[in-house]
Amino acid sequence: MSNYLEQYYSNYDEEGRLLLKYGQVEYITTMKYIHEFLKKSSVKESKILEVGAGTGRYSIALAKEGYKVEAIELVKHNVEIFKSKAENTSNITVSQGNALDLSRYSDNIFDMTLLLGPMYHLYNDDDKKKALGEAVRVTKKGGYILVAYCMNEASVIHECFIWNRLKEYMDKKLINDNFKLISQPEDLFELVRIEDIQRLNMNFNVERIKLIATDGATNYMRNVIEQMDDKMFSYWIKYHLSTCERQDLIGATHHSLDILRKRV
Picture 1 (cartoon, rainbow, N blue to C red):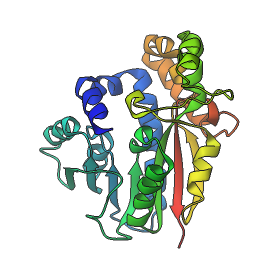
Picture 2 (cartoon, helix red, strand yellow):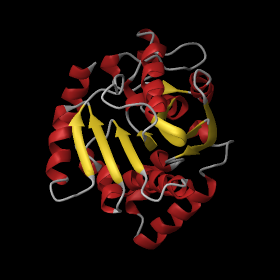
Picture 3 (cartoon, rainbow, N blue to C red):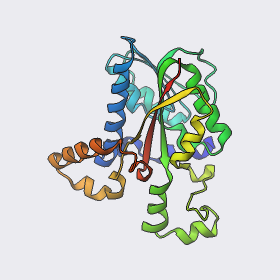
Picture 4 (cartoon, helix red, strand yellow):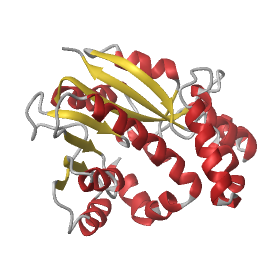
């Protein structure tokens, strides 16, 4: 799997995506909830672990706010970009590592653990359980685990209908009769439904606090979003944040954020 990811992220402009308006929506939303639950922590100087930290967008921003951040990332290309961006940032360490093995960390040491990318690229239940289990293990009792997922329905609508690839997917047996996409490592992204997330969570001593649509309808209308002036974009953000917790809309988002608390 790592070979596919190395090739993809070595050629993909992740930095550029995050600067586009549609890319900012997911970031703004995720940071809103990171801050909300850091404030709920009783610890004045919260310690954060980001697993699958990419090029450091979240970790570096949080370190600059004064939080102590440790970050690991699987893809060497991303680690190199991350390190170059973090050169003058204190309170942060970054190293290459795998979400499936956090044995370098003891139990119960982080106030918040961010798992904002690994679940996009794990294709079987055992690996998903390992990644979430490790994140839960290293998080303090009462601490928070924030887990991001790519959702099935948005990808079905785009890939199969807007881009007219349904027949191709059916011929290759990449979609079942219930319109659930079936991913392999070479497809890069694993797609889930809400019930898949809930089933995974049942394996651990956690409670869900919130399930958030981090981009909602944004990716359905990228061209419209990009053409908005700053005032209209600010209204879009306001609208999105006012609806992103509505459970009747969660399944249609491209990306979701599951906010869990480790039980005491």
